[in-house]
Length: 300
Image (cartoon, rainbow, N blue to C red; front, side):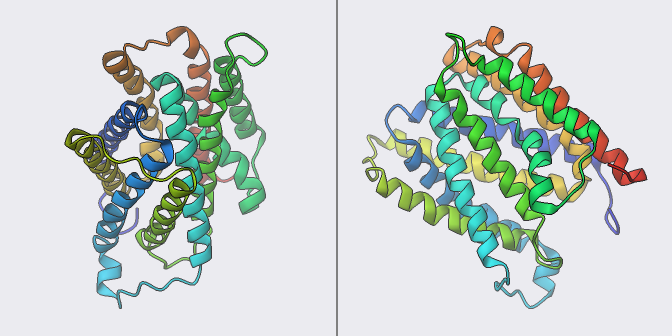
């Protein structure tokens, strides 16, 4: 990290706080899905998401020192990424309402595997045998959790899987942005597109349900605060240390989700998740370790 102090320990701690906040947001979405549709909750989330995106842009010193322009040549790419986020949220939020919290969350951690696979056609990257093996191991873990062809399989398990692929697409396409474009500016465009897309989607799927109580309004506000704060924590952590230092700790979200699901919803899908969850984590960590070695010494 040229010209910047690397504070890995504090960055890791802040990224773990982000994981907790994201899971708290997910708990509210799961609880509220009994009365409100996934598209509605996604719309509320994205409208609140405009705030942290704008704050993150303002926190970017280079943008403040420059002309503070909001123009961007690749606005179509950013808008497309935002619409992909809209669909990903719809699928994931639906899964939270239909599945055990920890199961939906664990399957969604296949994003790192999809990211590696999509980097080949979208970025032209060369992926070697070790990383393809890691992807294969992770997907075997997904199969062990889903158990297709058995009585335990349910189509809803495909929802977080599809969401993971779309989230991976948004991550890969972010790497296509021109150098010099502030990441928060690109994210602001994407967040705006996601907000518009989710509102349109909610209206197309039946509109917004009147809020049943002030308590529900407060929960939706809290959902937005948790989600927005999580985004800001991630932005801060990525500015404090290398992403490769943070990536292994992202899998702490799986046991956190398991504990939250057990405490708040009396769910303990241990038999469903094991040993598949271990393979998903193992495949993801193999990719992280391999990419760190590649940055140091080259190869694929």
